[in-house]
Length: 79
Image (cartoon, rainbow, N blue to C red):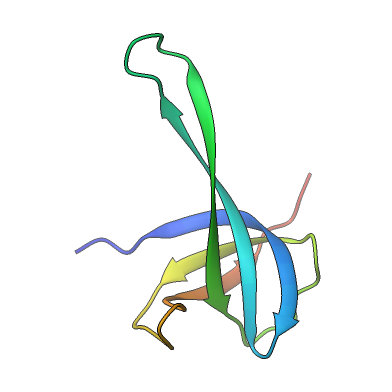
């Protein structure tokens, strides 16, 4: 069983102990073979302090609530 890991940008921190992370998932068009950017907004639980606009890595866990099934693993340093 593999655990899903995503890296994305923090879009919202207005909820209590929950953040919204925008993850870009590139997909290839079936006919034209061009990469299309799909953005998915995932809700994640956090214990460490996270700022708006930070890049974070989130991993799949057991559900915290109806919509929250990810947890912030670490903050990714940008180069």
